[in-house]
Length: 609
Image (cartoon, rainbow, N blue to C red):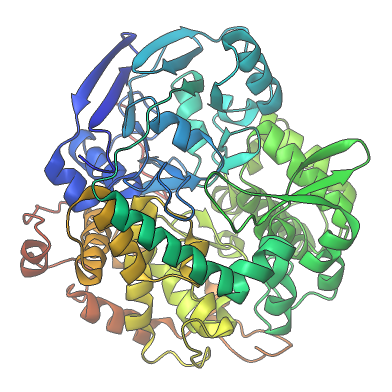
């Protein structure tokens, strides 16, 4: 098959056995790879109510049909699982080199099942796969683990691993690849830690075959030309990285500050992309096959490394009331080394700061307290003292102290750096996200603030559902191809359909490609319904619905969610309770599946298998 390698590697950690399965051509055609393939494999393999941290949960590492090809930004991969933080079907994806190198071993996906009694790591060298003891690696941080494995195995190996946070099943633990790239959200690192799987090292030399090489060359040439002419992908992101939007968000009154109490931050300029470039930047860096090169390599003293990105500058900065750029950069580096998601870490610390401010819980953490970041992050990763409470995320922490409304989250996942009181469509996107509070499912920054592809009134709720749904479907497609979302600043579904058609030899129109996204979105919805999620979970924190922004350009605004949600369900062909009807499922080639919601407790119902 053009684009795909045609094989899935299955590893049973309990028995130590590995096996190969052929990639089902029909599943490949309908779900592509990455997030789509991962979702379908998990839906079919996981029993309802599976404990996310139990041995019956699975991890699926998956590439896409454009991974490792010349398609712009074709260097990404994803990991899918049931999240211990949210209880939802979950995926995270990352760039760097690892995904391309894994596909070069001859596999499209890796399914990790069961749990080992003792720490192990997996070596995939070519098409051979072997589990080895990781006793000597357990307890080490991410850089040390990576270096040790490369020293042991030799040059040419690329490593994905967990740090101490994943080992201790911190619910915001990340899986890190290429030292500083993060499969960051939803506690995927905790799932890997629960299985006693420390790392996966890969090496291979195979390349995916291209079904129509001449067509591929032409479409790639066109796409590169368009990206070079686009001001976002050719100038803004290469020059300032993702942090280029921090001042833009602040000036729009959509930069959440001090746990979303405010929507503008007086210290924004000091932690902006411009300040980062001026004070800390050493050079820019790109993922495999990417011409955008948005990653910042920075230096503080003798330490040099990647980041911080926009979300981190916000979560550990404005959201905690901190404007110390160096302190944020140091905290970012520590999160990377310990294997932590910076968004959830910063959001949970900000929640604790507000509980201290309100006199609800004497956490000792105060807004603007930059010196508290590093010790608190260490305590979270090692589950020490207050850090042990914070390690379970903002919602569980706030619930424990009787103030769940102060956790800025949806479905248990902490919200990112866009205040929806200044972006109505973003609020609808958060509420309906299949993985919880997330901007990567469908970011409305383009239409609501940047005018991409056109500018809409960001305070107007009417008409948001249609725009958001298209973004959700396109995002699902990009996560399944797997391509970087930044490519969509310059390219559209027509370009992606032509790239996919040339790679695979299967003719995809733009409409057919978006239907792949719709199929995946509905499958994820069915999974979550099966796990007990209902309409009541498609909501936002009370603050965003009832407490108006106090100052700035969004002053007086709240999220008008209910009319948007009704419109959203109607546009999707779901009933008023948010359940897809049988006609919609047949239309998407999803046989009508019985939905028997489980009784849920908090954000995550857990059952031991």
